[in-house]
Amino acid sequence: MRAWLQPTLIALIVVAAFIGCYIGLQRDPQPRQVPIAVTGPDLTGEIRQALGNTVEVHVAADAGAARHALEHHDVVAALSADSQNHLRLETAGAAGSSTTSAVNHLVDAYARGAGMQVTAEDMVPLTKFDARGLAGFYMAFGVTLAGFVLGSNVLGLAGTMRLRHRFWLLIGASVAIGTVAAVIAGPALGAVPAPVVPLIFTLDLLTAAAAFTTTLLGTFLGPIGLPVTTLLLLTVGNATSGAIIGADLLPSGARAVSALLPPGAAVRGIADLSYYDGTHLTAPLITLTLWAAIAAILLGLRPRLMQRRTTSSS
Image (cartoon, rainbow, N blue to C red; front, side, top):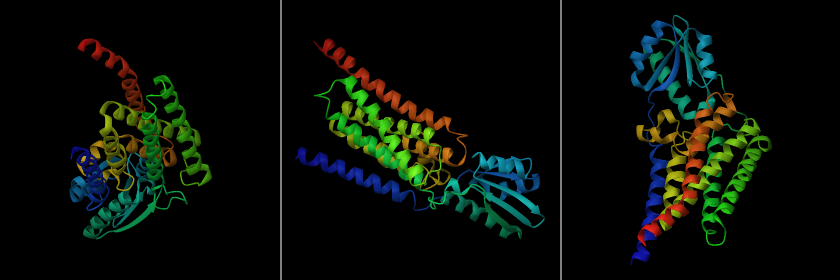
């Protein structure tokens, strides 16, 4: 009975989590503290009062300063008053269609209540070959999946390959996977307009983070290690990455873990490289590096831990 029950329960948990995350998060996305740059003391106060905690108002000295914040990904929209009854809304399509749509709806609602008109313009548009802004998500998903498959296969080599050789395999294959993904999505298909070299480096780190984490959990947790990795990286990590549903529209719990998991960090890094000149790339790279490095260190320490346990038990 146990031999039948365990795989069945694991499969049910995985399918429930996958559907719950991907469909559940899209049921009723609500804007929460969406960062918007607003010019003018009167307009700033009115927006804060009218929109409440749906937006996080960043006061800008003038329209130029607000646009600068938008183009450097400090905010997702810039709002200014052209005249007494006319507003100018500048958005960044690169921030994602769900986020820009939410901002447009919020500002339109305010303008209707105030008897004003709004002119909207996309200042950071998506590339021609990524009309829906999902190329970064699919790239991160594919690379994470490839890292998971790599780590799963390396697990099976534990009895035939030394640990250091498995490490070299993980590192070498991670570099190859990241390079192939970057070249296909970037120069070949033109869907990700990021500089190739830093994009390769980001995807190499994502692959290594996924591969080493998969190998680590499979080694320490045994048969349930791979399902746990599936839930952590492929399900929760990708669903909360902020690509399908913008991070500013996620529930508080999902938003909290979004940038801390490798897929979410990678999606942010890819978008930053592609449309914002890498101005906020440091945090995603640190996150990916920590995942890969900590998993590798713990994996490397396991033989010593096992030896100590054997010695103490004897």
